[in-house]
Image (cartoon, rainbow over all chains, first blue to last red; front, side, top):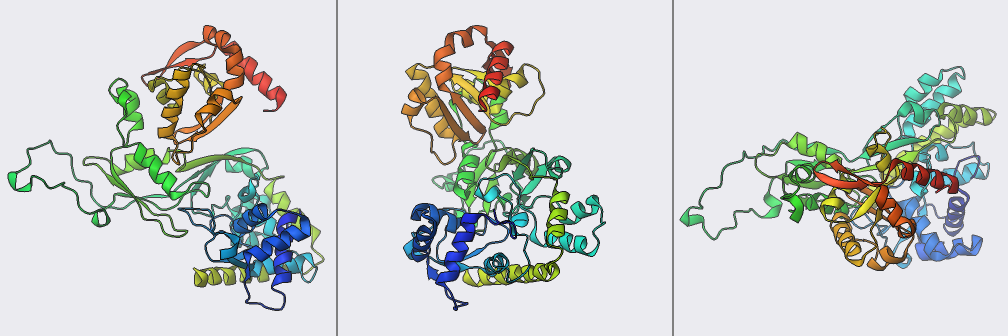
Amino acid sequence: MSDRTGVGLVELTVLRTLEDLTAGRPRAYVPSAGAVAGIEERIGLGPRYGYDLLADLARPWAVPVRMVSGLGNFGNRDFPEPAGPRYTKCRQSHVGQLVLDAEARRQAPVPIGLINGTTYRGGTQPPLEPFRVLSALRRLLEDTRVSDAELLRIVGPPFSVTGCDITSDLDALMKGRWTAVRQTGRITITGVSVPSAVADRPVPPERRGWTGREPLLHRPVHLMIESLSAETTTPDAANAIASRAEARRWHGSHPQLARHTTLPIAEVEDRSTGSEVRIGVELKPGADPAAVRDRLASIYGITVEDTWAFPMPLARMMRSWATRYRDEDVAVSLDRLADAIRRDRRRELRNS
Amino acid sequence: MLLAAVLAAEDVSFVLVGSAAWYLHGHRIPVADIDAVPASDGGNLTRLHAALAVMVPDGRVPAMRRFGTADVVSVRTSYGGLDCLRGWGRRNWGKLQSGARLVQVHDAGVMVASATTVTALRRRHTRTGS
């Protein structure tokens, strides 16, 4: 791993390849096929591995700060597989360019590794909210005697790129211990009232033959799932929820287990688009939205549990970074990084 | 733990080992995935495969053949993760079953390996680093 940026060596190779291919053309995107060929030429990493890596660095739901800016279909929350490398284009993002500049000593280091962590590539170091990390490091540069508690308060808990709620023993995690971390998708009660349960009545003659269902798009939903962890696709989550509404043959013989596992759900509708997650849940008459929300959160996929750890106490990691580069103009590089993150976000909005 | 109860309700014959079994023996430890040793007969493995096909959201259940041949089959279900210890189970099924006892999880009876077996297995896995 590179010391000045915390970026992995293979990722750095991706950026260097893109820099070479886009040299002197600040707005040019290059075909991903050319990029993966360049990566293979440099380090012998095969095109399939190289493209997976490239796509990971370009996916908006994978890392807090993207080093590659992608054009074309790099996958979405419904179907994460990207289109083939012949059909997509990419270039280093503004942040990616800063990483290259920092590595080439054209500017002071930037704490990308500290922000992005390593969980997106299967590691255990959690990501952090970019602007909070920058604020904490600025505070540290102003006053090296700032307390650990204040630093940790500024930097905040691990950051869910996809907007999930994170629960964990934060104190242990911040001290660098292995800690179980749960990411739970955000489930909102929409406020649409659930009809009360009524006893079955005979259908009046004039309504017989009608299915009694409105077209799906016009039907109100009582719960809306608005985020999922990066490893859960929206169809998987929708299927997992729908399967809890189905009757199983053992429901009669195990009524208590059936009560614990079955959800009073009438319909599940996946309205997600691109990187936005929106799964609507329509409840059966008489269901309690708050109770169903809590039970939905217990479904694996809506909640995901991992074991994470910082390589050392987080406050010490930040102090060590700030001390190591105190002779360079780190304050300016932090400002540039903040600016680059904002510019990349604007660019992503334009590209989407 | 719900996963073990649902498998039992689906008439899958298995013995629970690992942290879930340890938990059911009264040790309050965190349980993430469950480890189970299923009975090796074809009918049981077919029932296990069919039950998992309903519980795995993306429908990608390992092929039936793997349950017959692989040492460990790991499956991620909507109730949590399941590790089927097939290799070890094939060799020790008789011993495992004789010491096991039935524990009610909700209203489903789950066979749990004896505390001695669970401890021995945990030691063995710690030693091999798995």
